[in-house]
Image 1: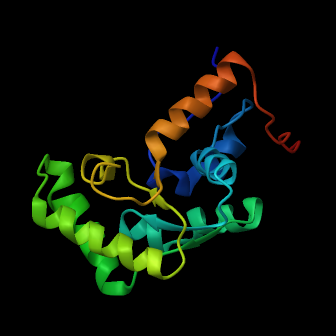
Image 2 (image 1 turned 90 degrees about the vertical axis):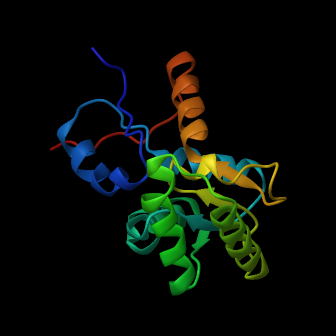
Length: 166
């Protein structure tokens, strides 16, 4: 049997509470893994980039704030639409354009100006476009961070909150 469950996409963590309620083994939550990385860097205010759903719905930012004391800000409305559209209309189709990259860099700089100490790449496709080679921003590659978190758990279990009894 499995020792733990991972949901290997940011957006689907929207249903993490339902998954946790239905299983008897730990769910290694992506947001917890990312929060650990943010804390290890001594940061407490970051920006969240991803689909509109991930950026705008509360499941990601609330967990960061309520369980980890990390403030996650999001881009302005028009910039959120750009981030979302690039994900679905380009990145998910294997298109990586200089124009999209320039827009993301502009948005990242605006978020840094708003106080973001780092950028959560809250869609696993964004890593194709935004890399340390094109920005000086501290980037949180959620897919890599989550995979490393899971590997550490399997090799030397990390503490997970005990599941409440039904």
